[in-house]
Image (cartoon, rainbow, N blue to C red):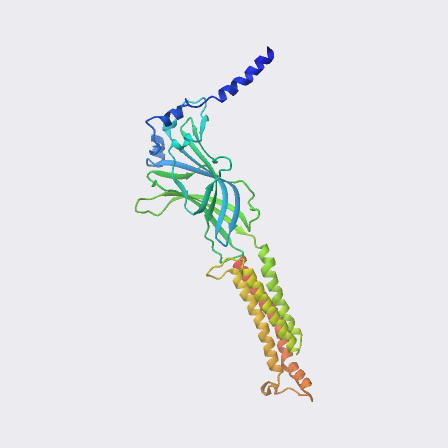
Length: 384
């Protein structure tokens, strides 16, 4: 007898929990003749005074579940997000035991009026349907409707790569309504923190760190059919430059420094020419290989300026070697004032001692000083 009573206590809630909702007042309204999903819900008098018109206020909040990729080559980013829209439909109010009571609708939710929001900078998108479409509509007793959808979207993101790879970018999620002008639909962010990032701001497997998310509300430029409300979430990103320092800046700097060895090789012209030309060709190959993985744009990037600096100093090293070669040859003009020895080899060494050595000594100091000055100016302009 005691066991039967306990079993009855636990069974009754299960029985009532599985009762069909066919007699729920919201379903009665949706199936009734007085409700049409083609007619948007009008605000009450209080809401109209707040909005200043009779537009339907649609609030939006987004939960960023995952940022898969930020692609600076294609200038886009891909994110999985939960997109929630909230509005008041007073036609769907019902008497509940508490203000937080609600009914969740799936198929029947198609009969509810919904706004026609879209992502203005969307490239592609898809709603998740692993086992079932990841979307539902929830109606509260107060008439509040929440429409939640999980989807993956590829957003276009225009990037200014002038300071690449020390650049900061702003990628946006831009939302507007396709069918309703500002007099019909007003968009707003829901709450003080309407964009919730569910993962680390360091964005694993990405070249960027998320510094901040800023939201704004505005209106699009007027069109022939009217003015449309829109909201924007700006993601402020800072690029990680460490990898570029290791694979571009460090090797090119080493090539430039190695080219200065020619200033210590004396009158050995063939060795000097071979060294500087080999380093120049190697550096050119290094820069071309690095450019294969960099965004191709029509303007000069910071990394291009650095590559140009390094190329100029490498070429100047070759020109210095060519000048020394010219001075150490049997040129009568430059041989005036130099004591000649008895043989051709001694004569060549004398001419080098007279002109080449002096030029090499100057370049040993001048090249490092000029390169350091250019590097400091570069850091000042592009890094800080």
